[in-house]
Length: 127
Image 1 (cartoon, rainbow, N blue to C red):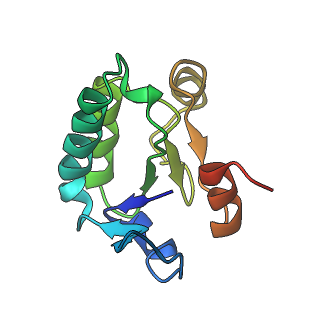
Image 2: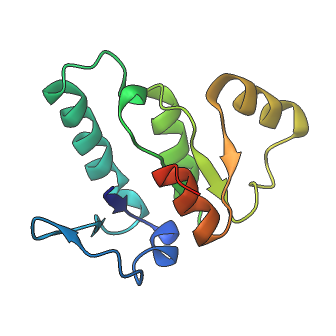
């Protein structure tokens, strides 16, 4: 597992000691929220390299932290690309009405961000 980080959500992962894979750290930071574009390009390139039809076939999880308004643009860009199972937090944005939240959950698998331990469990799929 490699965790690619950008923006405010990175702070829950960047101090973890997860080692490396062949000299490549398991946690790679792309920078701030507006640098999420770099992570999307990496994901799209991986999709191409592996010959996948859908970006959601990659073992990726996007966590978006709602500390700044830029996160809205990141979310909209990911939704436009069809990315599913995005995790938002630490709380849901105030502008999400219950109806809009339900549409995002039902159609895109939007979920909340949990504790570092719970989120890592989701990332690696182990108990």
